[in-house]
Every structure is written in C-alpha cells, then in structure tokens.
Amino acid sequence: MKTYCISAFVNNHFGVLTRISGLFARRGYNIKSLTVGETTDPAVSRMTIEFTADDYTLTQIQRQLCKVEDVISLQLLSDNAVCRELFLVKVSANDGNRSAIIGVAEIFKAKTVDICPDSLIFEITGDQNKLSAFFEMMNNYGIIEIARTGVTALERGTF
Image (cartoon, rainbow, N blue to C red; front, side, top):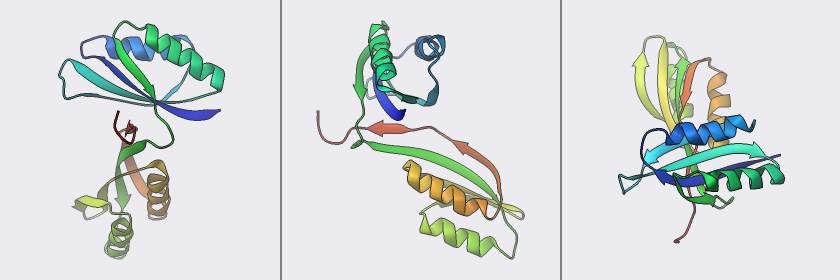
C-alpha cells in the first residue's frame, strides 16, 4: 500500500463534493485528506485527494473518478509535486518554558499567532516530514489541540 495524491478539476457547483466522496465511500476506499478550492476560473474547483491504495485500487479509483460527470480532468501527482499542509497547534506554555517553545517554533519557521498565559498557538506550513517533526517537538511541551487543513499540491514545471 502506498499513499497517492490526485488533483482533479471539477465543475464548481453543489453536490460535486458529495459525489466524489461518495464514490470513495461506496467502494470502501478511505480518503486520507481532501481539500477543495476555487481556481482562477470561478466555474472550476481543484480537489486534492490523498489516499492509500495498492496499484489495482489506484487504477480503479482513477477510472471511477473519470466517469463522474463533473470531473473535467484528473492528474495523479508524482513524488516531484509540491505538497503542503497547514497546521494550527495549541501548546501548553508557562513563564518558565515559553521562550524555549518559541525558540523551537522559530527553527521550524512557525508563526506565533496567539499568546495566552497558559498556551501558545502556532501556524506552520510545510510537507508532512516537517510537520511531523514539529508535532513531535511540541508534543514534549504538551499539545492541547491541533487543527490541520489537509494536503494541497501542484505538480512542478509547466504543462
């Protein structure tokens, strides 16, 4: 089993997200991450779908997605694609460890977006390796809460 990422251009209207996610659910495929946003054309949205599958399942997913009426085009993103995710991480902090936590966050180029007497909130974007490493470091101080966007990606180069 390998993790794959598909970028799909779809018609931007109601029900499309339901049809795409329903396709995965009906066939027992699990979506690891799904992000959707409008493109430069307001009539078209880009869906970035991350999932784990074997080669056969990947082929089936691609074939089924191509059959969906609202799918305009589909691209399997390669390992060469630029993939990013956004994390918001709330970390337990006090006067004794606040500067150490902020120092670690600065190494990861995380932005401090909230400071309270008992916690800090950081915003960080990056690939999954960077975000996992940041999560592990912050876990040493006590993560209170985390929110993440899911993967968004573009293939490198021009097409």
